[in-house]
Length: 407
Image (cartoon, rainbow, N blue to C red; front, side, top):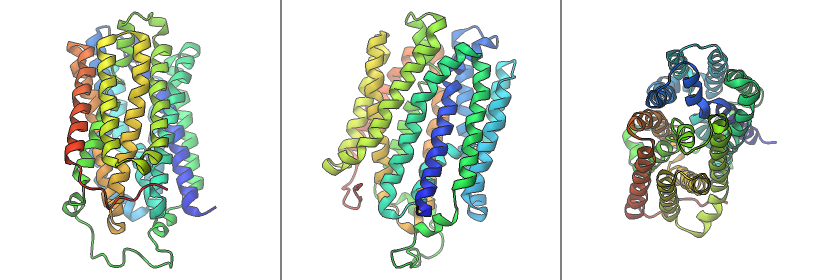
């Protein structure tokens, strides 16, 4: 097996394990906050939103410093550092007694975290350029399949061993992912991925480092940054509020973990389908149409969830939401990756990662604040965000003549 392919499998497996472990417990964080003595629904949502948002927020802030260390010592050790921090923090979560303890641990995690959002960039950097779309799609599919399994398994575990036991199980998942990366991933393959077929360095003609300004000048790049930010923003807004919304819809408190877990799993499964079939769609339709169409479908789904409150309609809307988000996300990364020259590969994907992290960080926080007034407002804001993205992409995305369609 080529080393670059083994790298992609290692990153994919670690992403699957990490995202599965994370969703064993984090979709139910509002319930855990309530168990720690916070009784007001608005306060529960606020504590949950801040706790979910602080980790990616700090990760985005510290990403340049960790990136410089990664350039010097290799990305593998950076990922191992991140996974090790998840093992420690998730285990410690099982023993907290106050809501602020959760926030404090998530803050510590944010200082050392970052592996999840780096997975797509690492896979793209490891793969030969003509295999990049497949590498991106594979990792993103794993990142969706994991959350499809995690909430259901987490809901079952919550009934058997409680939410505290779920945190210990999550730590175990991250520990296995750490071992997979340590054993399988080879930093040398990243350097080999930018070699041409004759072994020549395709970056040989580049002069110096690629500047931040030159990265932003790539065709459609700023627009794709905005799209990736918006997709992550909307996708992560469900975490702090969906279990509370399910309970308000009439579901008994004892069944809330299982029902909300099923809804999260529906979104994850259909999101994986969106990632998987995006390549086929890109061979038949313009990328602009896929991104705009996926965003529009997600917008309509958010609106249906916000106005219905009926479990059957929420389930159907969750399915279409996942399809729209999944297809639009893979198409956006592929469109951006196709215009990044080999000499700017690391810088370009680093900027995309920052956009993704900012969306992940700001969404739970803003969703938590909005839900103090009304949980339905969160879904209506999501509708507005996705609808705006669909309109802007359809009107503003330039010709994709430079894009390489997935094989």
